[in-house]
Length: 391
Ligand SMILES: Cc1cc2nc3c(=O)[nH]c(=O)nc-3n(C[C@H](O)[C@H](O)[C@H](O)COP(=O)(O)OP(=O)(O)OC[C@H]3O[C@@H](n4cnc5c(N)ncnc54)[C@H](O)[C@@H]3O)c2cc1C
Image 1 (cartoon, rainbow, N blue to C red):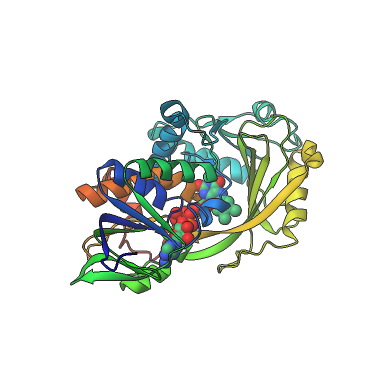
Image 2 (cartoon, rainbow, N blue to C red):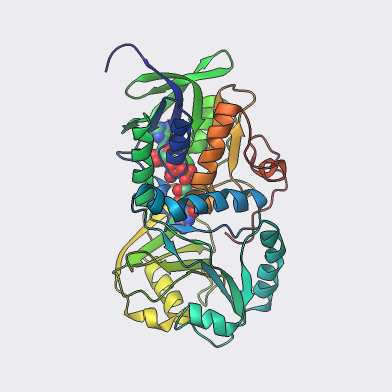
């Protein structure tokens, strides 16, 4: 490397679910962009842990609008650009076995419809048709949102980065940002363990590590990771359209909910939220995970008992106190944009958030309406924050 520090229009720290689309949209706006990640390739942080579910059917307006935009781009990506990103339509389905869950899910429909989403309460017959082999005993019906789908997080990160690079973006991997350069209060670039890079605009998209960047910058980024486990089977003939979310606690009482779907290659991919959350950054998968999950899946859809599990893993949800991301320009540090705290939905939010980041960085403006951006803005008050009921 030359001794003269390189200068860019924008530096994105973190090449993950959010950093890569942010770089893509910044490059699309004509900026000379540098993306830096401490890992050896793009998308190797929590992006790689995600099982690829993408839904717009949330209860929070910002999440609804951001994920709707992600879906719009993902659905048509192959047609428009020719790259395989593993898009699989088929929607999301929440089968319901209790009155409480029926009320909770039906209560979300009006806000979802206000934002133009198609998510309907359907009867048990319909659920049984959409999820062949599902246990019928006690099944009350459920919600089904056909417009949602799945995408491969590994493919999308690589494809988006390739397109960003065609627009001039540079990628440096295996390089850790250790310092944010300042020009007075403003941010002026970054120092890594390998070099120094200048830019008047810096985007922090460091996922589960964001609290550390907050410390380096002297700002509050209250992101605390907790662990979630996932797995994938060998492929089988296509039988399952939607991604299925089981909200029941399970007989063992150890899981809050779990979800699974069949991806574009026929593999069943699954994940669960432990009832007792494991805070911290450990990525060592627990031996008890697979027996619990296998039991749950077989109990719900008995035909899955023949599946052959290929791999399990553990990853982190970068959580915020209110369960909603932290996005925005940082008034006390001119030039700084943050996009962190994506919780359990950073992959589906990534493209929508990337578009927001480009607009905030270049125009200083949100694309979202105020009603939506107020809930996710940097600097909001977390006191008494709620965590969205359905993660
Ligand atoms: C088991 C599991 C299943 C999931 N399933 C889904 C799902 O189906 N759908 C969904 O939407 N979400 C899902 N998620 C959540 C999703 O994975 C995360 O919300 C998302 O990946 C977070 O994106 P991010 O860009 O903030 O972080 P990341 O993708 O982790 O990117 C942050 C990057 O910053 C880099 N970095 C950090 N600090 C530095 C530094 N100082 N210098 C340089 N680089 C740095 C890291 O190496 C990392 O690559 C799942 C998560 C888990 C664990």
